[in-house]
Amino acid sequence: MGSSFSGKLRSGVIHPPAAELVGFRMVSFADGESRFEMDSGRRHHNPMGTVHGGILCTLADSAMGMAFASTLGEEETFTTLEVKINFLRPVFEGKLFAKAKVVHRGRTVGLVDCDITTEDGKLVARAVSTCSVLRGEKAEGR
Image (tube, rainbow, N blue to C red; front, side, top):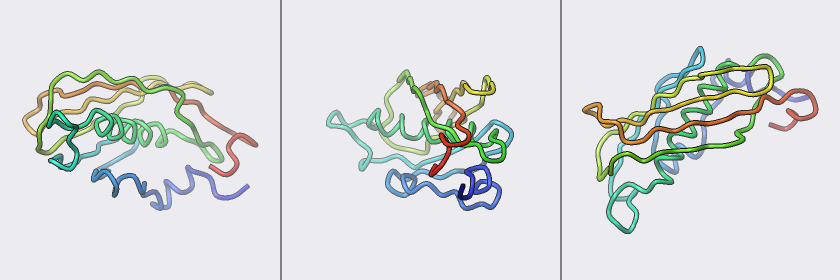
C-alpha cells in the first residue's frame, strides 16, 4: 500500500486544494482538534447577499475532517458518512473561525462537532459529522 494519510499528516504534506478554491486556511490541528479561518466576502454570497450555506458547510466539513484525521493511526484513513449543519445567523462579510473537536473516537466510527463564529465570537453555525475509519483494502488509494 502507498503512503498512509496519517503519514502525510506527520510529514506536513496535507494541503486541501478546496482551501484555495473557497479561501480558507488551516490554522492548527492536533489531538482531535482543529482550527480554520477564512475572510468571507461578496465572492461567497448567495443570491440573498449573505455567505452561502454551502461555503459554511465546506469550512466546517474541512475543519471536522482535519480534527478527525489527527486521531488516525498508521495505515488508517477515513471517510465522512454524514454532515449536518445548523445555520444560526446570517454572515455578510468578515473573518470567520471554525473550531472542530472529536467528541467520540471509536475503532470504526467517530463523531466530530464544529462551531463557526465571527471575529467578535458570535455563533454563526454548528455542525456535526460522523466519520468511518478505514483500514486495509478499504484504505487503499485514499
